[in-house]
Image 1: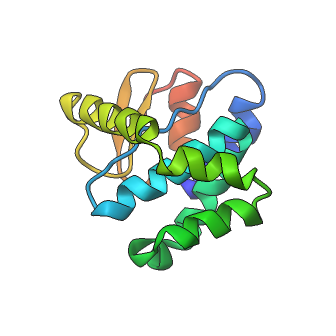
Image 2: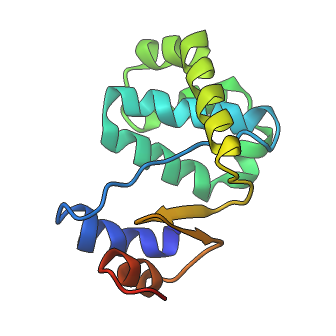
Length: 142
């Protein structure tokens, strides 16, 4: 998705055709939850910061897998987030509860593979080129 994401954002999200929604998958150990909590907490301060944090985590996956709390706090600071507000959110139970609910909803919908995309009701599994997304967004089937 990240290969196609920039084109989707520029050609469809910014034009008001598409809304991107992220659903967490909490199935790769404790840092699946920590990474999701960090990105969602960033998004509470500024929705654009969610995607910025998400991108940072994706690009640094090897570190994220074994990261401790300090990594997430330092990343938030590097992205210009309000540190105390981020830490309160990250450490709090409310965000963890929300993430567990979203993960359960995802599982109940039968989403078990990453990445999985739902575009106009059509489910796509695995990484896809921009042209596949554009075709579905514009009403054509791949």
